[in-house]
Figure 1: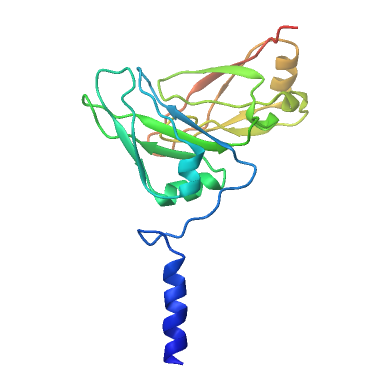
Figure 2: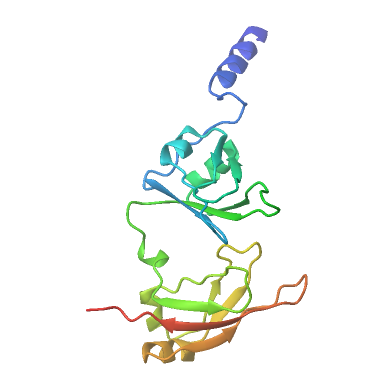
Amino acid sequence: MRRRSLLQASVALAVLPLGGVASAQPRADLTRAIARVGKNHGHVFTVAMADVVAGVDKTYDLTGSSPHAHAITLTAAHMALLGTGEILRVRSTEGNAHSHRLWVRCAPAVDPPAWVTACKASFTGKDEHEIVLPEAELASTTDRTYDVQGLAGHNHQLVVTASDFETLRKGFPVTRHTTRLPEDSHMHQVTIERIQRKG
């Protein structure tokens, strides 16, 4: 019995990569990684899908054309999360007395319609919030609530009403306010306008 337990333990250890974290294969439909730098001024952040598949810690130099350096280490746990298709939000190291928010997501070869916005939006403040309002949802006849975190370090919700959708369909902008953040009660005014496609 003791010998069997030792053999089972040996097999379990053999399937773990160095560092002791079990890697998981990314979803089959995910073929590329999208990486973005908040409040960017020349930094470059490129994550290869091969890095996600490898599933081990990797450090990225974000310097790019900027005169100062930043870096980020994505851990095996980060890679596993990316492999599920979830959004990863992390911060770079400090450089020149500041750091940057980073946003990473794995994606299929072509962005699904739900990821493509039919509207542009401007937010008050400098938090880099964003809204994705797909073309199909412009036909909505009910209110919808959107997550507008984007590259910001905190989240808000934004309600777009059935009346707002009707206004957008007619080609006019709408202005709404996000929910307030519980910690400091701040919110943002948002102006949404339909993107006029050529052709």
